[in-house]
Length: 366
Image (cartoon, rainbow, N blue to C red; front, side):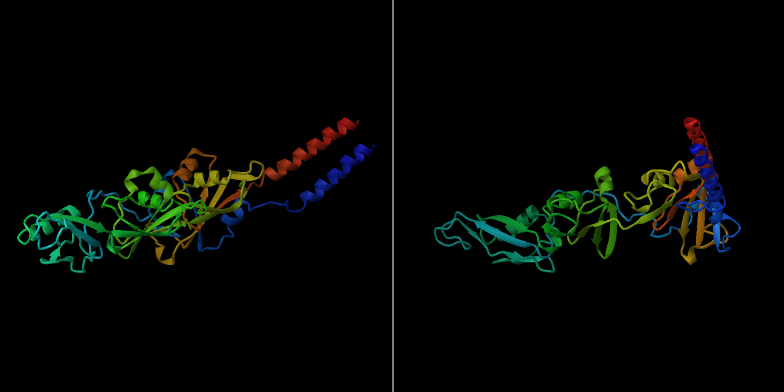
């Protein structure tokens, strides 16, 4: 009899539960997309056909793609630039050499900085234009100019990189600092390696290169995987390794509800769901996957060349192949809200399953 009372009490509880709203972690799809949705929020169902049109709309949350450039190898030898330090050593085996003292066979001259006009001063010769020359070419030019003065003299040259032949590793590496470019073919990954590599504390590292007043950026993983992106560094470049700031929010009936940072340039809607562990089987409605996005007001277009409103809810039905392919090709934008809506049916199914368990429990007691 006690078992029957237990079952009866449970059914009373279930009946009371059925008269109120069951606790849930997210909205049902029609609560967002239904008739009560404000007119300035537009609903767009995403399919294979519509996703092609949507991808032509202006980007939201960022400029739409990373600004980077392809690798263009430079000459193996570096070019002398203003600010470099040049040290000349004169060799001469003549006893009465004009350039050397008695018993001297060689003499290093005082280091000279290449002037802003690209010249360097050489005693007895005056200023010589060396800007843009390789060290070997500069040695030949200086040697030629010295020959009328000291026919038997030989010139040895040493060049130390100045500011215009160096690059800065600013942050995000083991040893930030200014690094001389030993030639004109130093890649950005090679320079980062010289600086001790990317700090392990930097999550989802993004390389930002500042050059001639412009900024370029690319994820470190892309540099590792694509040799064409491993560009050549120029003198004066500044390189920063920072954490990727782009993110989207995952909420609702997903395995995880959290802020998700981009780990690569583009993430599809299907990838976004997989990153947070997929849907919760007992709660999620696969016909009601929603992505909420806000566009700039100036991006709105009435002719479908842009979003119909600054606030758009994209609706995915991944129970159909058309919806799955649409989700696979739909690109998540920064600040998107990826929402897995709740199923209106599955809580009722859970109640029925609980009732069945109580009947089984009653049979055990009997």
